[in-house]
Image 1: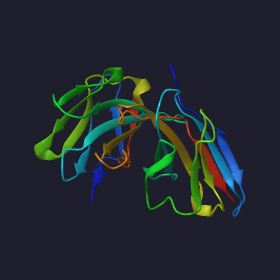
Image 2: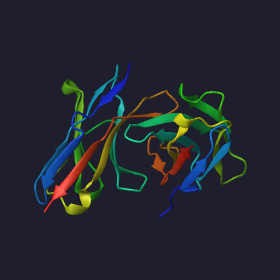
Image 3: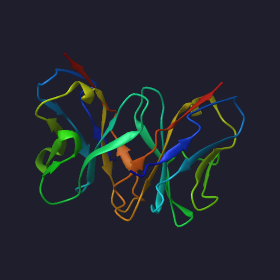
Length: 114
Length: 113
């Protein structure tokens, strides 16, 4: 069965430090991959997506993610974290030919310290 | 920038009552979705809707749930007889022909007492 795993429930980083949030998926083919961010009391905002092509994708707010087929991973990175990046981050997988439903991971809560 | 809107932001209802959650998708979008997030859990897909019919639904979306696009702008989720376990944040999303770019609304928090 398809699954999305975000191994880290909580991550704390210092402002200005680099960030990497992990995401692993289980799927029979290359899925469509997404990262969403949810700030407190807000909806889900799309940060970036991967469908095909270049495995390093750039998103909004200075985020990037790299698709690694051999590791079934799609980790999110940012070189220098800002306090405003504190939020919940969700990795999601879209299944082709499935009615376009997204399957979300459980999320990683990011805390940014001064 | 166009956005998905949802009303109400918070709905409190008694068990067994019917509720209707409303969404206004982005105007030129053709695909509509409902997801829910029980407190502390992940976001779960409920249903997708295209061309005035359901295109996919999850096992959560049983006979107690229904969706409708009553006019050219609204998209609704109805729960006929609410249960305590229906308490969750419900998100509406929409997308255009690039169907994987789903834009989410701010959510409706449903509390069933």
